[in-house]
Picture (cartoon, one colour):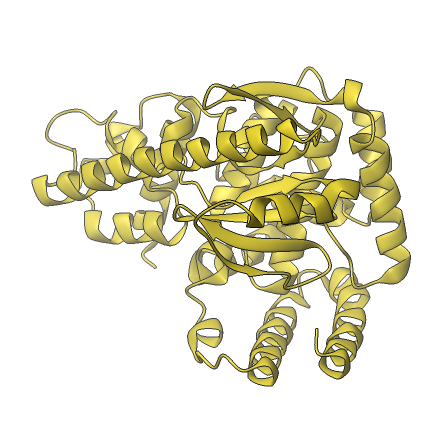
Length: 372
């Protein structure tokens, strides 16, 4: 990718993310708007990108064709958010009527940290119900219009409803390392098991429970770390992290955060991705706990992978190479994808790869023999 185009892209993202005008001097000599839009699409940042482009003075703005594409995408993003919120409200209302108070993970809860929540490209509904998991799944499957219901792992059950993907979580996350997994489940249970510690916001006219800030400050990074090791992440997830740290900066207990990160083995990943958050996405350095300038080289290596692979690694040729749908073919394809990802990351995150890959492979063999 052209270096100047990359710099222009990040300037527009910083503009949209922090509500400040983009630097017009960076665009005086022109811009490859098709290339810029492609990067934004690969990273699922079209809305934030459009907000940044809208701050440029007349004469430096995108061509009419690109502007039209941005408008259509932005309107589609807004409608998708509204549809997802309507389904979420319906889901919460159904479960609450049966005495189940679930917790929304990521998604529309994090969107509320943005200046324009409906400009954030939405994904699935991740809803944690813990000990009420089986009853929740049964109730939701009874809704007219549910499709493609499947428990694809011990962590969650996923289905489609009114065009939206819903994942009902038994666990917020699961590690293939049984020792780390025990620590992870204890940590999650201690923070999510206290109803009085939960936050609440209104979405679609319904009050929705959110995790405590202490949970999200770690969980966003945990989710990033898992997907980075497993198949890839996008800048959208890093933007979510930046906005959370910024909006809740006064509420974050740094001592507890450090203890939790070290207990879960996440401090090194935090520092590497934190360098990207500060130096490319524009998070003020004072709002990034444990910022490490020494992480620059590894951070730039991770950034190259993120830019090439796109959101969740969807543009990685290894991931797109096959569409086999059989159980063994799926397992083989996923295993190849993970090994490929780990081989790229080994020089950047050797400790994390060595502590993850053996357990992942052992778990994969177990699943092949158990058919799960």
